[in-house]
Amino acid sequence: SKMRGWLALLACVLVAQSEHGLVNGAAIIEDHTTSWGAAGLGDSLAEAFEVALPDELFDKVLQDCLVFQKHETDERARAAAAGGAYVHGKGGTYWRPLFNAQGEFLRPRFHIEAAIQLLYEMDIGQKTPHPRVSGGEWWVQKRDLKEDIGFHHDKDEAMASLKSTMKFPEVSTVTYMTDKGAPTVVFNQTTPDGNGAMPITPLHGVISYPAKNRHLRFQGNLQHGVPAFLAPELQEGTIMQLRGSGRERITFLVNWWKDKPMGPNCNKITTKLVKHLGVYDREGVARLMATPQVRSHVPQPTIKKDMVVPASREERTRHDITIPGEEIIWFDMPKQREKGHVYDIRWPLDGIFGNMCKLDLRSNVVRSLFHEDRSKVMVFAGNEEATLEWLRPLAKEFEDDLRFVIANPTATLDALKTFGLEVKDCPAAVIHTTRPSDVKYLMPKKTNSDGSVKRRPVNAKSLRKMIDKFRAGKLPPIGGNDADDDDE
Image 1 (tube, helix red, strand yellow):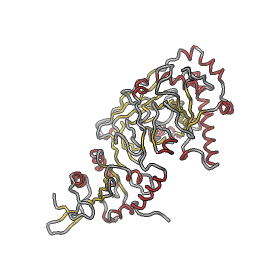
Image 2 (cartoon, one colour):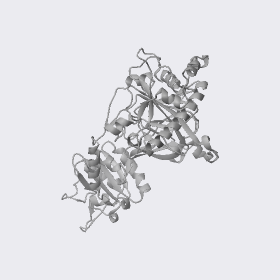
Image 3 (cartoon, rainbow, N blue to C red):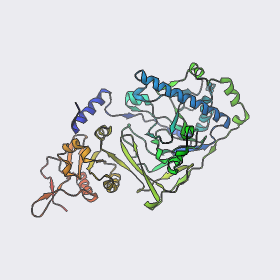
Image 4 (tube, rainbow, N blue to C red):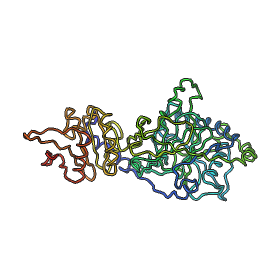
């Protein structure tokens, strides 16, 4: 039978989590100073290069990418038909060790491995082993221009699934194999445990539009994604004219790691598989790598442009994305912007908002909320857009202490009942503390001069007053004696 009730749902979540070991996730905090310094990321979120690979090699790598992307798609279908072989449905990646025991580059067996060697030289700035980089984890993404790549942190995927532990690469990279599609958006935001974000609201980002043979590298613990709504082809309306491969966004991803990520998600490629796929060409690759064109090739650093968010709201567009933990981030961009560049963007305080999630009792947001140390401010309101206009700034102001939630009353009846409320009581605001103990608070009612009591309207002023009382320890919990409030 269907599990009902907010607390019953919580119990279900905690039992399920405890069966997997850790109730809370964790992260392995490592010192990436030397690898970031080598990659020029000591004081920069991301750097980019044009003509990253020699043209002759780039064309061969694109062919290899398509072969491996098809192989991976076929493997996923085969694994699914056999009952699933990937951990938690996550896709597979490949591991390329860089050096032999003598510190010499391993000989590339196919063109992708040659590209990985050149990208290492470019990203890490040396032809010898770096103490924090032993190899590259690589894979291929081929997406329709209307497809998102959801916001995420690159990590050891099997470790995250099997041990509830986040381990990040040293440096993440994207090499664009086509010049179509949405940009990669990177926020100055990491996560301590896979549940929360630091900082809660990012204020700095890099937006990199695809350009053929452009290479983007960024700190390996940063939140990033590809929101399809930013694809120029969608905004210009030209996508309807594109057919077949012209509608594809293809990227070649290489992440630099100190140690190989865990299997079964990340695996070395056997020479047998390389030959089976028809891409084995050790001698041909060696000849290409020895040509003057390849030996003398120098990638060109991309000059990042500053994307300035206009002061006027009329000159901006507002977008929203969802990050892990079911948090929503709203961010503004200028209406007038050139495509094709790599942008550095620093948002003004009224240009980006976070620390907000929408309550959905069927989603992971419930687990995320109950594992959150901060108390939750929950607003039940039918008019979501109008409520968010005044609620977003409050959520940003109090993000260090409080997590904000907006809920549609008719879709969250079980949660309402937990606070002794019904739909007719909405809009309503509550505060819920789940750690270290479970305590609930209602917005105090107003006592009129004739002794009658009525609910206060829920708006920025009344909610701020409620929050101030809560933070001062003067807000009575549900069941307390002083539930009315006649202060003005």
